[in-house]
Length: 161
Image (cartoon, rainbow, N blue to C red; front, side, top):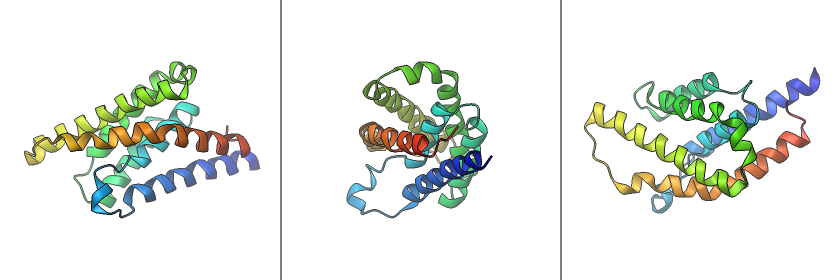
């Protein structure tokens, strides 16, 4: 029982760190390249433990991110849920790919996230699309192997199940 509680705390602490990295101020020069830290962490945990961290977790964390960013409530929760739905449906296939193949699939999922997010912002704000809105896709794809390695190491050392 104690190991299960400790594992749950490790997962939620990693999600909290992902949220803090998402909100952490960075210089304007690298702001466009900021990876979607929270989404990457949620993707990992929903791929590793889909029975425990799935669409409900994504919706909850997306809502928290909406509130903290001051955007319209539900935009990120819907897009997080859509991405995690795809991950949970295909978690067994995703696990069998190498980390580099996973990084390409993660890039596709991040692109889907940003395009649906743009589409919803276009409907609400009539915003324009700029190609730099897809730069986090590149940085997320590059950083995925390290996130995967770190969270997998945490999962194994704390025996998260």
